[in-house]
Structure formats: structure tokens, C-alpha cells
Image (tube, rainbow, N blue to C red):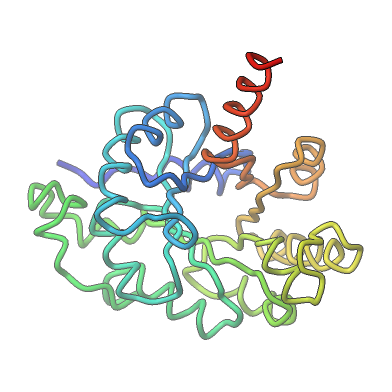
Length: 255
């Protein structure tokens, strides 16, 4: 058994636009459904979805059935959480609330084994190694993990150059909702000042040679963000899509 090549990381670093969807249902069935729908990646949300380690595992297994890459957003920027999802076999991790280079560096080290980091060596017992079948995993895993850190505060805007320059940070993901709230415009991610900050975050990330990401539910903006250099593009969420479809169906049959 060999460590799988992180095809999502390779595609993103090659500048290929990769579309994906958020998974917040906490169920393997919806993960399997989304994974077979044709997206490039599906993100299991451990920050705002009911996704503990126990719920994340069956969703990773469901996504492994097809070719859609799995991403996990952990609940907070803490090393122990990252260690758990990596040991589950996830290779691409999104970490929220990264406001400065010190936090970015700590997350980068948590993603990697020594001497490039401080990830614990317990994966020999975990899914990431095929429960011990891949003895070479500690030597090869560092090259295949992908760390995306989330810039979603005014402080992160101020520190974006240092965050993006951090060794081991593969990309920066912009969180428009939290950013707008932190800037004093809650619920207004399209406010001119917030838009200006978003454009700055994307531009500085691209200038640093790193992966730029964002999520938008506005289809008219997909091409716009791609032209600005975004390659990790979130285009929706499972529960939002399901809710919209169910309500539309109910309206049709009751009309």
C-alpha cells in the first residue's frame, strides 16, 4: 500500500479551477450523493455542521467510492483536531479563524511529521495508513497533505502577506460572511468595503504563489472569481440545495 497522491492539491497548484460543495448534513448518504454528482471536491464541515470525528469517518468512506476529493474543515485552529482528521485519511484540511502568521505556522506544523512539523506518530493504528498496511506513510505523507487557512477577519486582511508567505500554508480561503461581520457589516458580504478586502486577500494570495479560495452562492460570480485567480471555489451547500429543491417541489404539487 502506498500513500495516495493528493490529486486535488496537484490540480490546484497547477492552476486548475476546482469547484466544490459544503457538506453539513453529517450523513454518509448525502456525502455519497454529492460525491457522485460531478464536483471536484466535497468539504465536510466540522465548524458549522454536526460533524464530529465519528460523523466525518463514514463521509470520507462514502466519498472514497468515487473520484471526488475529500476536504475537511476543522472546528478551530487547534493541532489535536488536525491530527485526528489526518489520521482518518483526509489529506486536505481547511482551518478557520487564522488571523496571523503565528497561527498559520502552528497549523502548518500540525499538518506535517518531524522534522517539518510536530504531527504525532499514531497513524500506524489509523485509516490513513490502512491500519498499518502502509509502513512508509510517515516518510511520504508530508508531500501529500494540503493546508488551506481561512482569512475571515480585519486582522487577517492586515496580515495577509505574512500568512500567505508562511511555509507549509498551501492556500488561503476567504470567508466572506465572517469577514463582513468582523468589519462591521454583518450579513453584507457584498458591501463595497468588504468586497475591497476580499479582492485584496485574493490578490495577495495569488501574488504569493499560493492557492486562493472562496465560497459564493451567486452563480453570476463564479467566472468573476476565477478571473481574479481563485481556483478553490465553493459553489453551494448540501442542505441549502436540498432545502431549495424540496420547497420548490412542495410548491409545485400544492399549486
